[in-house]
Amino acid sequence: MRSSPRHRLLSAALAAAFGTTFVSWSGIASAQASAQAAAPTFDVSVPAQPLAAALNELSRQTGAQVLAAGDVVTGINAPAVSGRLTLQQALDRLLAGSGLVAARNATSQVTIQRASPPPQAPRSRR
Image: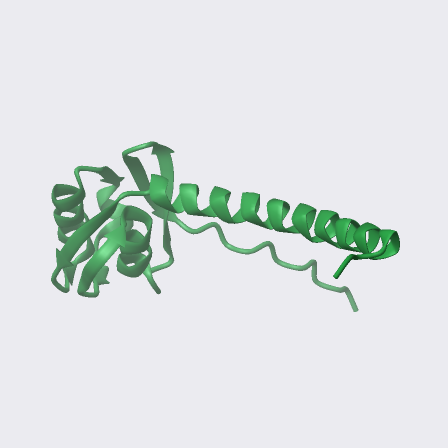
């Protein structure tokens, strides 16, 4: 069966339209995959304990430098964290609900600090 010139033109237009869309989505997907591949994962097993000790243990297991001022982490207990995780995932789980965040200074250096409070709306005067 021979296709008409109109059919070939329509097929080429559809292929071009969907091919371009496919290529752009493919580029996005490969960029996301390479970003995920760039973050190494670790077998993390940190028991529930005071946060300072938990951060030391995470640092030992991942090789990352985790820095925190004593007054920032004192009196905070960390939950148990385990599994095959990136450093960021492990930190997020250890710090969940603590009011602290991990700020990355370099590839393998992290500083634990207080989360900045959200800006307060100005009060209306009556």
